Amino acid sequence: MDWLSSISVFVQVAETRSFTEAGRLLGVSSSAVGKSIARLEERLETRLFHRSTRSVTLTAEGAGFLERCRRILAEVEAAEFDLCKSASAPRGKLRISLPQVHGLVMPVLVDFMQRYPQIELDIDLTDRMVDVVEEGFDAVVRTGNPKDSRLMARQLGQFRLVLVGTPAYFRERGVPQTPADLANHDCLRHTFHATGKLEPWPLRRSLDGPEPLLPTRLVSTSIEALEYVVRRDQGIACLPDFMVREAVARGELQRVLDTHLEHSGVFWVLWPSSRHAAAKLRVFIDHLCERLFPANQGQ
Image (cartoon, rainbow, N blue to C red; front, side, top):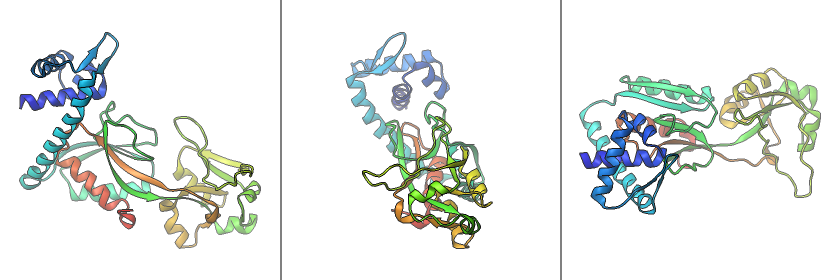
């Protein structure tokens, strides 16, 4: 078990690049972390880290050892899960970060709470890009392509961005037939919280054509705020299809310019590759995969 513990400490140091931060996450002192790494290097007869007063970086041997250690911990995680499944109900606390799409995620979370009453959820609803490892999250849900090598990932489902407005708004202002027609409409725009930049609308453009003019009536960091305003006949918004699907089916919202849009987004659940995924985390990941996008599983 001391060998396995040393591997876990090594992976945590490799991912945080800090003895102090690794110790904080593991609940031990930085001195204890240093001694564990020293014993591991002595046993392997090789140096795993370059150390300086400012940084801790992997040696070439350490980088190769890291990938093997991740696989070892993944196997331990799987074995632990199989045992926990048969021994007792999943329990404990999970710290999760989710995007601010309450209508999509909250019903799934309530269903999870009812299904696993002994698991406590600590939910951070934010659209900012959290650092899963540094901030101590057990798992996060995000869009885009996973790029962090410290994280494991599973695809949850796909979505598209669509342009919508109310029938009343279009009766008054007309239905745009081409992207150029948007110059005569009120556009409700989403802005990224971290940068303040406007999110581009996924309008297909000809190579020599000008960028469509989008007169802005409102900007918001919350897409749910945009949905509220667009439902009040105040303009056209670019929103995920899962958010407006039912309203479009009921005739409360109307999609426009579908043939001029090109977009495909993916939701992922991400979690630290070094973390021993107890039953509580495994069942949470499985629950999201089963329930969040049941209509397009496997796409």
